[in-house]
Length: 375
Image (cartoon, rainbow, N blue to C red; front, side, top):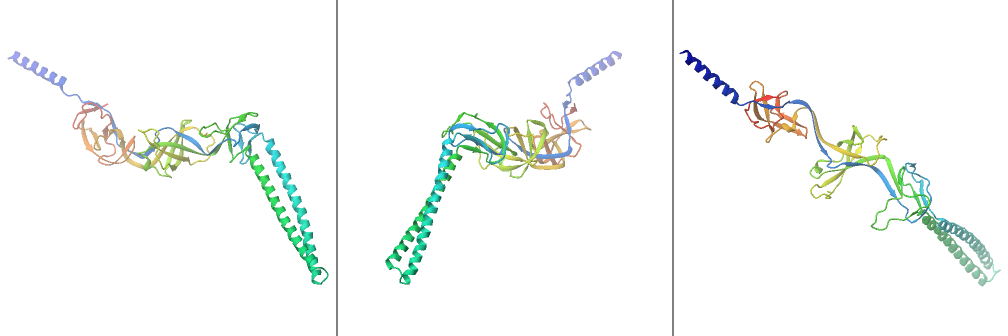
């Protein structure tokens, strides 16, 4: 009998050991808690944007020629209307001088002719008066009147010639002006492609050439960046934006959307984009330079102090695996969501603050009612 009980004990121990060794082991999972915070919906550019100046002029002379004056250098600040470059133009200056002197001569001739016309008019008036008194012949009076009218016409013609001569000065000045480059606005000289004494030529039609002077107004800067065509209908002028620059990795700049292009760029057939422009809210950004690479994050909507969970924990059908601490098992529950982005999703119903949900939903064996063990 004693041996029988020993046998039963051995069998029981073996069965228990077999069950312990082969029973399903709890799945190790990672948990996150539902907590309160902010959820922001944004749209970001698909490729790096660029810091551009509101006003930038790539200037070149209208005529080809040799640079005779170059009073500015790279990096100089210039005022609107300041001379930037002048080509050799001694011949055109001589033409202007001749036109000026021709105008002076025309005015002198006009004065001479008009003085003669005035004398002729006085003589005609005198003869007309004495003819009425019978002291002069009618023929003499009529001849004097005709001569006065002829002289008056010559005076008018001389004055017209004077206006033509003055127009010649304007023509000569315009031709001279084509040899000069002046600043169309105040700004900084970004680059000068040319040296004193070198020859410059205007760009042939259809062949782009480097500008002789590149002028930038750095007091007004904006970001030009492409966004996906799918997101374009959501972006409107005036929406707030956050601007990030590679040159300032630890700093964010506030801005707003100032323009959304009314057309789609199809440079890449499989990734068509729409160009947007974002302007800095703070115009005092002396450290920023045109040409910096930048990213724009447009804020479409934002809510503060809402219940949120990571977007990655939500499965198909807006369901999450909730960890039941009392039983050590998972419960699959459907939740209602609000605003959502890549990082967080707002929960409007179906979950309470502090409840834990599974974040490692890709683990094998995860399912409703499965026993798990938090890592």
